[in-house]
Image (tube, rainbow, N blue to C red; front, side):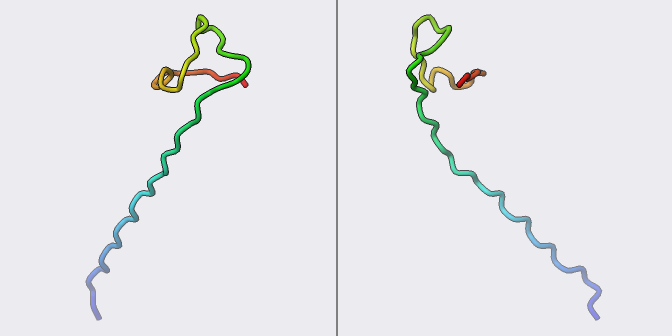
Length: 53
């Protein structure tokens, strides 16, 4: 008999999620409360944004 502990199995590699680019936000109503400026996703990056559909 062999009293040695079995070799531990390596942990599975974490799954990587595919990065998906969001489409630009365009609509008929335009932007509200922006002083008439149309915004892009680059303008909103890193900011908290509320979207009302």
